[in-house]
Image (cartoon, rainbow, N blue to C red):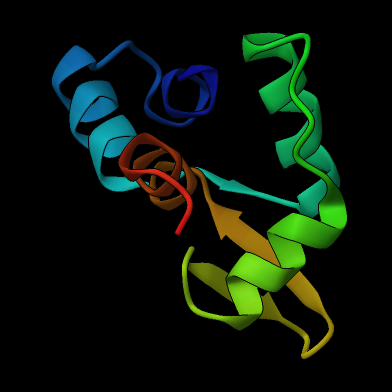
Length: 85
């Protein structure tokens, strides 16, 4: 949380922990694919599949400027844990 240290002049661990727990992890489709490949090198999930899951409401996403979608990382992981149906 270097940004907070720079702004406040000292490290505030309570602020850092509270902030990191409240801010959702948002990823572009491309970033999501890259992170999935880090977790599972043999991952076969495609950008097309992610976009279909977003359109069908199976995973949560945030629309930015009407044309860019940011995937809620935790929503995707929950969806994958439950199984694709």
